[in-house]
Image (cartoon, rainbow, N blue to C red; front, side, top):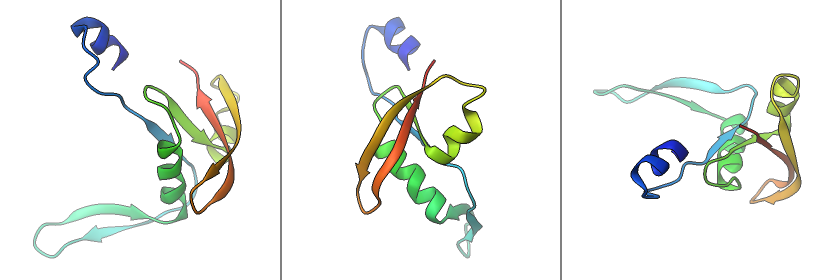
Length: 95
């Protein structure tokens, strides 16, 4: 999005990405038109990571940070109060 916005000279929209790692429940929804979906705590936390992120950045949970810390540079955001979840440790993945 950064490259596209530079190219066009217009800041059309931003993208927020939230990632959490863990177990999920997966299944098919629908009777006539099938859709594959996932549910669970892990998905809810990923949604919170997106919600409390910033445009153009990838916000990750503590679980994901533990998996990525040796491969990517991450900035510790500290404990952030997340709706209905309490304080959660969050990190930005640096480009």
